[in-house]
Image (cartoon, rainbow, N blue to C red; front, side, top):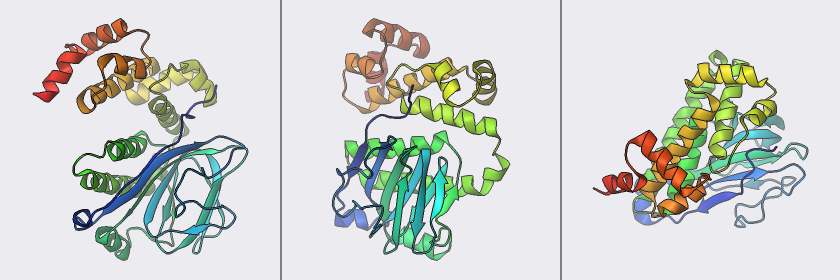
Length: 297
């Protein structure tokens, strides 16, 4: 069974003059899973973003690209061709030639966000990130995936002050990767990385039914060891953790969208509408409708 292969999801944003005065604006954010032996990159992207890996490209913005699965390579005007794999971040700089691509045999999953502004220029000028150190090893990290996923959702909703919300997420992502990169050597236990990988698999497949034993096999660990280590690491058994993710997502959809309760139950792949109502009431103490109305009040 293959995991983390749901479809491409991205958004290109408009930026007005008022947004620019904030100091940082986001131009694009997205996720794309590239299966082995498939075309890369997708031809759905605008011309100024699309590139052929053999020729590379030059952007007019900064980008943070996070690989959560697979392997590939990266090179730029300041970085020789280097192999990269899951758990690494590529930092892209405006006006700098670069190229990257997944390996045909593995593919990869990439999250990315593109941005610009005086604030990030100052951060670069002060040496917090640099074209001389474009590849950061941050490990497979659930919180980082959640930040990118939130940015995609906020961009697609396109409500008031979206640019300011996204700017805050960019700072959060940047702070997270700098911290993770500096501390990775202290948290590089193989078991911890496998559990983080399992958590990301669950997040990226929250709208599906998953096979816990299949995840353990996918990670190359016995099911009994996986359950024990997962419980030690998270405080939850794997199946319980996945249900908590579904509950958290249901709360977000109830509070932040106009989807009907039946649509939410279907979207999160509950076995029935009635089971969703029972599950939610038992875990939260109120019905989904009551929870939604509480948020409105």
